[in-house]
Length: 75
Image (cartoon, rainbow, N blue to C red; front, side):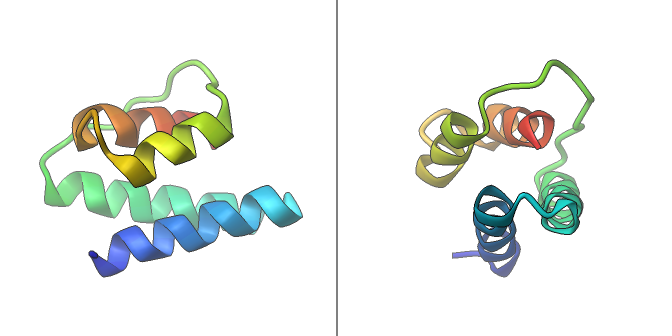
């Protein structure tokens, strides 16, 4: 597992548990780093359900191109 992905999972989990925005911001930073690694552009969009987006990110059945965008917007 990629170290950046581990950081994203940790920070999103902490954000869900504590609702502290510092974890949300940290997760968004790591999402941008991972997106750059895979040449994906993240754009702000509609808010999504965080728990569903987090589950989709962990499973990664749809690929990073879609899951990174959705998780970023959910945070």
